[in-house]
Length: 189
Image (cartoon, rainbow, N blue to C red; front, side, top):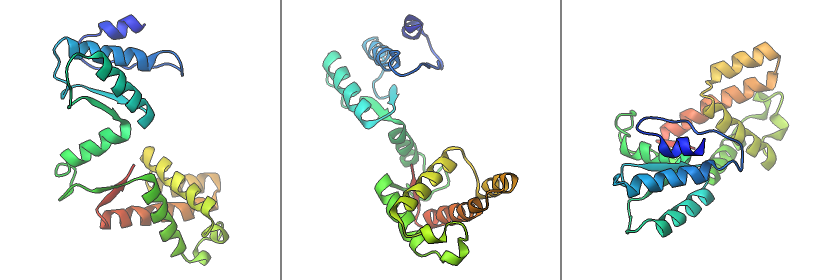
């Protein structure tokens, strides 16, 4: 299977497997072979799952490849998304590149917004609005909802279907959070 990845020609190829099966190693090898065969390092990207993997992979590639490669494209998923936003902000409907909130900034924004909420409008969770742990749970909820491209309306529908009254509060907050980020010309990961 790894040889099939190394021998693959043009076009997309999905490489899957559990942890420790060699996905990263074979993709790094394929990337190195593409560069060695003359591919433009600025037109080939290796996308990895974490900053640690990016640093390890980049270091291994720079040790292996024969020349200086300042444009070596080893990025995380988030780094790739950020790059796309910067380069194509106009096509995405932004007048200028949006400011990208890191997880710390996102946490601070969620905490700020939750502290401004009226607990009486949160019947299920009102007593939790000021708790750090709840703020982080809400932040994680926002991330997961956006990863799944869920709208506040679809979350409210799911809440109705499952009888989860607290989710209505979270759906409303998601809509408000997204509006605030739009007003700030900001996005989160």
